[in-house]
Length: 226
Image (cartoon, rainbow, N blue to C red; front, side, top):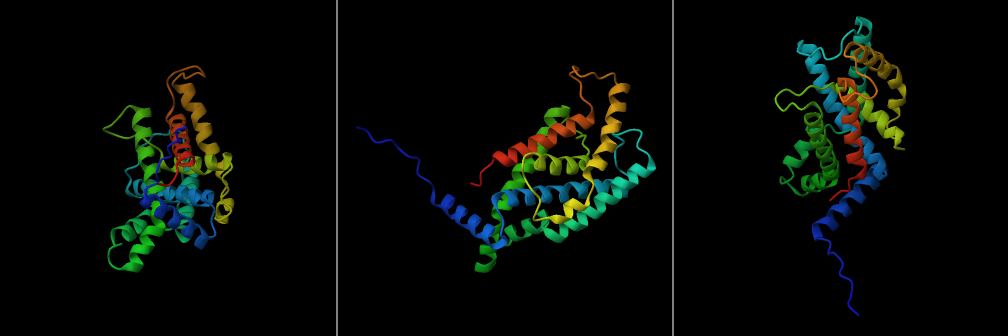
């Protein structure tokens, strides 16, 4: 009777899993907690894009009919949320710095190996973000996106799939549903203006951002560290 062949696990995969387990133990995280943290790393990057565009006056008017009060509410919440996020996570810039300097000494190397899982999952999400926006807007030259909306959607989508942000209690201080309702009301106006019905192939920019967020979340949830 022939023996069933098993796929041999490469030593580096075993080592990576060892460092992942150590990292989770050190942070008192589950893998779900780590993936929630990666979402917040993504959110920090997205808020950065949003705030830079707003503060430089280069933001695109992709959403019409927002009142000054609504714009201010979104801006202030995003600014405050980023501040809270950065108190609780390593930003992607800090992670990249640690990765780039891992050869300095043994301590640096060990630190880089411990955070490599965050780096890995973040890159998956970042690649999915760009791919999804290009695929859904059919535009490789000028990416049209609403980073502030994707921030809200990413957190909501993770929660809806059973991922808790219990390790990041500050999230509960933000009324994300209230913020999302601003975009939701605008979406109704956009559909009326462009005569988009339930069965239309055409989608509003807000619906596209919903699909982009969903793509990222599904990619992250199904992905394994390797």
